[in-house]
Image: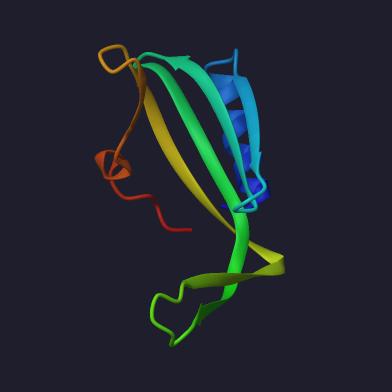
Length: 112
């Protein structure tokens, strides 16, 4: 989901429900930014989270042929391209935590 579409979704949520709570967390290790918005709906408290991170363009495996030698993976990230993932959550009083909602429950998204 691009930035323009994300802004449209936020505006629509604000028009329908109002009282949005915004949060943004940046993870320096994975270079990811998690933007979230929380609102109250007829289904209860809902949370929409968008995770944006740089696109992985290469993955290098470093290892040694010596016994007991370690190995690690080095990721090479794009400076210009990003990838985004959207997740929807509902607050669960029983779990006292956010529970992810399967998007297939809403049917297929219309094609553009």
